[in-house]
Length: 322
Image 1 (spheres, helix red, strand yellow):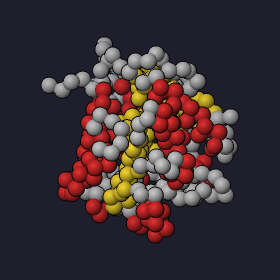
Image 2 (cartoon, rainbow, N blue to C red):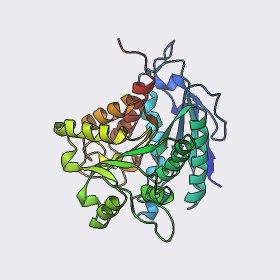
Image 3 (cartoon, helix red, strand yellow):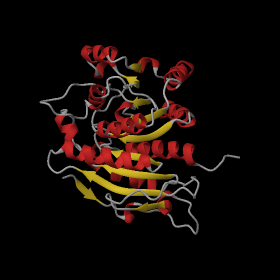
Image 4 (cartoon, rainbow, N blue to C red):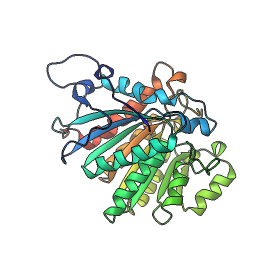
């Protein structure tokens, strides 16, 4: 059985105000096993404090502490969302020992329940193996409605590695999804670094008809090309599942990750991509993964993860701009 850990309201703390001005005032903490609240619009947060998949992939452990670090940085941010849309934090779902698969089954069912109740899932990692469970749920939800799902991953890596001894890991989630849904796998990866992906992974990506933009082309000066690629990909799908792997950012901005790189993309470019995806009207859910607070500096990576999350939610559910 996976571990269920409710989040203390004390994690969501910050300045006081008479009305809701900050995120910590808006978030209502629930138990992981609590059911969705009605069928109206809402936001459902779930932490995935798991680094078992990172360990299996020979990464440096520590991402299990990522979800709470993101919450702490998000708590004091200004809250600009429509107050009529409730925000629930359902705590953390972790592993007991190395039982990653049982945890993924639970997460899949949790996400599916939220989607069926019209809530927007925001998942905080934890290893990128989260994407297998998250992707399964969104795929099942879309297929049940006859819709085509597109997966967009901001990442230095394809995460299309094969299983290890028959088990998944942080480098295999999208390979697992491609195996499970071969006819319905539509995947765009932004920020791919050649140094982080051996030739065999490029062959795998081509065989699976994956679309990608390599790091040398993924820059703010090349925005028109990137926007065209996004438009081409998104015009062919009904819904989008967005995954943000923090190791895709340059380590100048994101030192606290499992696999840092000095050659990653910038927050400025990521911000434009996130706005474009949110404005598409097709975004169904998102996750932010691979935060490793043990190696962070002045909470820079945790703040970046929190800002990415807040920006997308503000774009989707914020008050109408003047």
